[in-house]
Image 1 (tube, rainbow, N blue to C red):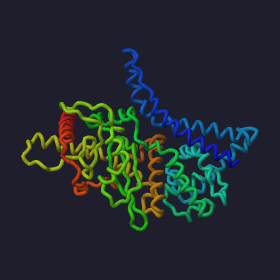
Image 2: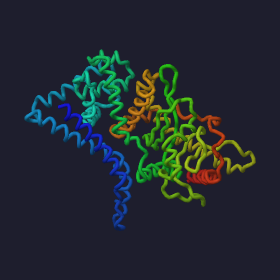
Image 3: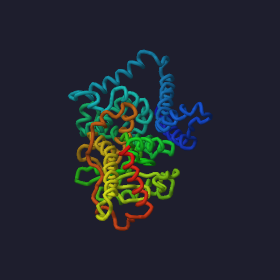
Image 4: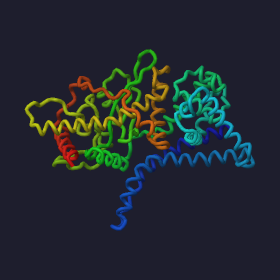
Length: 429
């Protein structure tokens, strides 16, 4: 039985990574065979990025469902027998009963609906059941394991309280909580991986329709979470206009500046080496503008990263100042999507207070909550996120930018001026 669980977990991990790789290597193309199908092609192309981003999760869910049924079929003569069905219902009811005791609702206890909880349990089941401590296997159902881990993330409750609530030992509560984070961050990190080019096209189209800014592929921001003992953990995010996380980097000490963190990331290296944000530029006011991100004043001005204008030139024309003001206002408005994402992460109980874990575990909790943030956007929409603004956005202090950054490189400066003119035209239209 134990070897079967381990095999299922291994197959799940390999399948998730393989499916993500296949989508990158063999992306679907929109139909463009004839003029008569152009409307259908346009509609299809608008949905393809979303399909690409989430197809892996659906494929994995289908695989695990089939795998789970096969395992149960070897143990039970009838998969639809009353004992099998009753066990599942009983376990879900038990988790719901103990999790919501003294809590307003299932969502308050687990930060998701019961249907999403059941879906997630089916997705993670083989991985949650394997790798128990060798000397003391837990013998807990997948539903209970997930319930313990989700309750820790959703409420921030201590392990002693969780153990008492769910009727397990404190060490089991600790193990299940950390195991959930490990499973999510190891096997499903592609849910917060930087998107492929075809998905970025959809992201940039959304920003264009909202702001008039072409070729924008995300908003970058940095925030910090406090650990018990006053140490801080810095987290860099890139989000789209719907507050979906496109990239997350955690693991840096919070005393580093936003720009220092950016330069230390793989994302920065990939963009500088043209491995990311490498699609053809668009011409704006006669200037070639590459794909880019926007951010606050804590970041440098780069050919692929645009920040608000400073108050540098008092002799410029009224029209020029007005264009810069409108550009700055537009960037600030775009950054609200990042503030909402950060606010949403801070609503997870474990991140809403000083995190009482070692640094590595805290990084795992941030990663798990970020993945679940995207899962909930996919499964349940953005109702909770829409109400959240603020909660620790990126630092806007100019002194955080190191002197060696070329803030006024001609390419970046010219592109930003061209975009400012485009924003002004968009607002007049």
